[in-house]
Length: 110
Image (cartoon, rainbow, N blue to C red; front, side, top):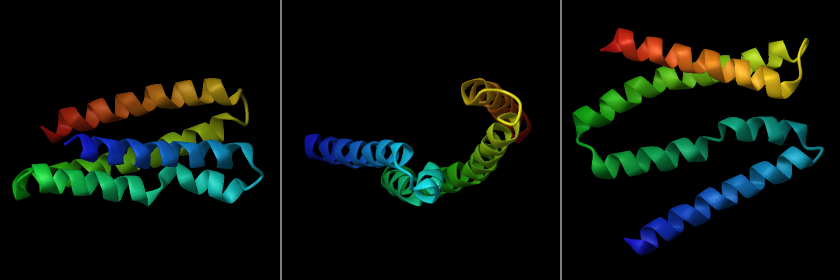
């Protein structure tokens, strides 16, 4: 159990270090792509498969589609809003819109 959490900590830490590195580098493509790094999704799905039955897993993955779409919309809003306002403000507004979107999805999917 401790080893399992330790491995997750190391993987998560490595990904955050890479995100930090690419954000500070001039590797703009990699800095953008790491925002939606598939390895996080695959790791999370692996953890879900071990602790959920098939019905729970399928429900979770169906809900993940809405989360993924919301994440794309969040990034799109940040991109558009930074034409007029600072990135920190654009991100704050976008996160607020994302939360509203997710609450609406939750309400309509129940």
